[in-house]
Amino acid sequence: MLNDIRSVHFVGICGTAMASAAAAMQEKGFQVTGSDQNVYPPMSTFLAERRVEVRAGYTEANLAHRPDLVVIGNAISRGNPEAEAVLERKLRYCSLPELLKEFFIRGKRALVVAGTRGKTTTTSLLAWVFEHSGGNPSYLIGGIPNNLGPGARFTDSEWFIIARATYCAAVATGHLHCRA
Image 1: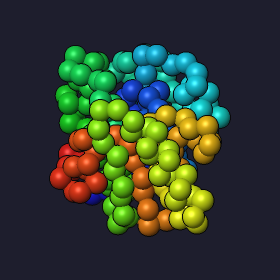
Image 2 (image 1 turned 30 degrees about the vertical axis):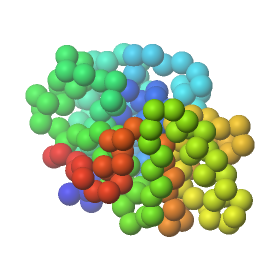
Image 3 (image 1 turned 60 degrees about the vertical axis):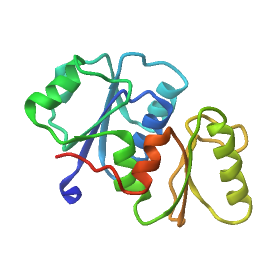
């Protein structure tokens, strides 16, 4: 199912996690586009530096190129023109956690930091400890830490450290799946 994906469109691309995943997908060789209602720094700059095409606003026209997969951000709800077009056209879609599971976490040892407060700080500390002990971890922090540089990094390490809400723990353990 995933072998035939060449192009990916992110609806709500300017979130920290969405932008990081979009850039990582482009680094993996996928054609990546995205859209968001609020396109401004630091994420607009981050995406521009990585040459990820971002369109301001949500419109059905953003899907004219018929991407192979659409990642719909958690801030997007029914009534959004792009989300509705995805459903009407029966395009393949998934959430960000599902994308992370399929393309970045599968086969790795995942440390998922969940909770109400302190996820970003705790994940930053874990990533820093693993980095400085030679673990070269992949991580997705959900913020831009001062001591690590980018808020996300995807490596060949067996370790993936991620800070997200509890639903992402289900992704890491294989309880959610992409929908075609």
